[in-house]
Amino acid sequence: MELQKLYSYTRKAVEDYNMICEGDHIALGISGGKDSITMLYALAGLRRFYPNHFEISAFTVDLGFAGFNDKLDGIRKLCEDFKVTYTVIPTPIAEIVFSEREEKNPCSLCATLRKGAMNDFAKQQGCSKIAFAHHKDDMIDTLLLSLIYEGRIHTFAPNTFLDRTELTVIRPLMYVPEVDIIGFQHKYELPVVKNPCPKDGYSKRQYVNDLVKQLEKENPGVKQRIFHAIRQSCFDEKGYNEK
Image 1 (spheres, rainbow, N blue to C red):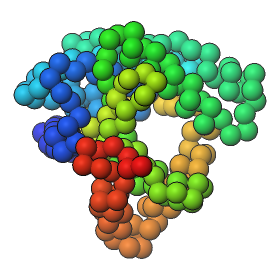
Image 2 (tube, rainbow, N blue to C red):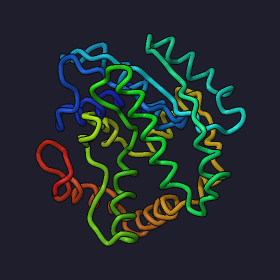
Image 3 (spheres, helix red, strand yellow):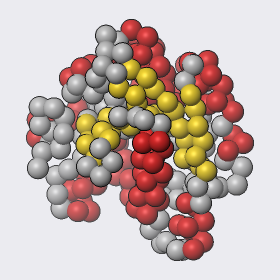
């Protein structure tokens, strides 16, 4: 995927769901993976020419796995090149989840603790919004996860207002297929940092991701049809989850 195509995908999502308003200060959650670094490219570029002026600050939540912080120099350099402030937030989340609580299914608690750290950072920085790098495939996978394991129709929304913090989460990569992000990663040699979590690749989300790939192989176009259904059924006109 070329950079201009990434900008096109991102601008369409932003404009379709009014994600960025004049004067917004947006906190970018950078996990170290290909998706979040691609989002950094997208919003750092969009900032230069989008008619609504906005600021961005990037951050990474360090879960506390040994050596992770030392692997972030490539991301630090990229943020420096883009003139984006970058902060690493140290936390004891790994110790809490794996040592103190000894969670058998740690993903839910980890996500809750990470979101708390993200929200605290965004408020401290005076941000109005947080950008997450969930892409098109993530939204499809989440719908199926909700159907299979929770018995409800639900997925990530383009916009999610958080009542307790008065922050709005936006997902500007919602139109970008994962395969294009993989191509972007290789073309631009993104400084990806491997996820140090021992559960990475062994979650229910990975199972559903593999399932969707098999469905697409057997029924070409099924992912696009599911995504179309998501847009028609799961969001109101502003991109919030329908109640």
